[in-house]
Amino acid sequence: MVDALVEIHRVLAPGGTLVDARPDSRVPAYAERRKPRGFQRFGVVKTSRLELANDRASDRAITRVVRDGLFKRRRNGRFWHRVPFSDLAELRKYLSEHLRFVHRAEWVVDAATRKRHSNDQFVIRRAVRYGLLEALRSPRNISPARPD
Amino acid sequence: MMSAAAAGSRGNELACPTRFNLHIPMSRVAQDSVGDLGMRVPAQSSALRPRPHDELREWGGSSLVRRKRVLDLGCGDGRLALGVAAFATRVEGLDPDPEVIANAKRNARKAGVRNVRFAAGAAQRLPYPDAAFDLVILSWTL
Image (cartoon, rainbow over all chains, first blue to last red; front, side, top):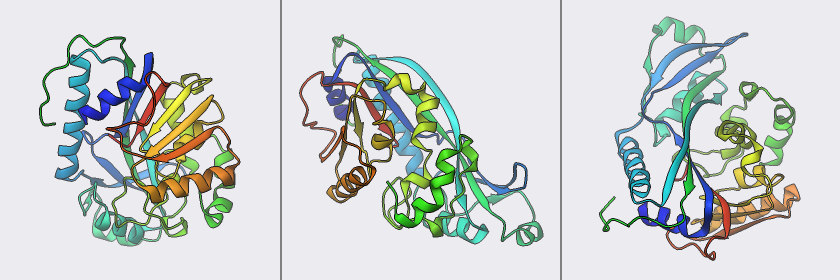
């Protein structure tokens, strides 16, 4: 990852911007039922351990290129995004096959409620984080290569 | 950017500024393997990720890309590259998977976007000269 970020720094004009946006695995995602007005939380969906490790590696790579003076952090933020499903079965299928999330939601409503609303529309609401980094003219010094 | 089947159902949603009005069940969405959604999950990144304009708004609005030379790394089917092309001077999309690049080129032709180019390649060896871009986007890539 660091080598890719060094390449990005090379092709960016000084003062140019790098946008790094990805799912925010530091907070859980939520399985929600769509209501006529708004959404009702049905469960919590956690990120798989492998993806958590990948996200931490990405964070370390960003930290390193900032420390090395290639980039300066300008702004960070987070927003929420909803992934739609036609019903509960489709949401479950998505989770069972998805590589980012754990395969089962932790339900916060009882089985009877889930059954009663199983044909309703559902969403997974998940956080997306982003960071804007400014490319600096010349790096202070590049630290020796280390495995990411 | 999307299949003909999905395009019809999304026409109204794209016109609507409310982010959460989007509701296309996965079963009605085109079957491809693009995105971070897991290799076995049929997915259309256009539907299962935030819409380009929503993402752009969160990052700071169209001024971020307006009249800029933009590189979209890990561009996939060109969802974001095509989404920001209207504002940018030119957009390059790069992805290691030649198959999704072929899709992206098809999507660009379909959308009639002329200032976007797609190529297959790795982020570790970018086929561009120094200081060629004002903005590089890593959207769901790093």
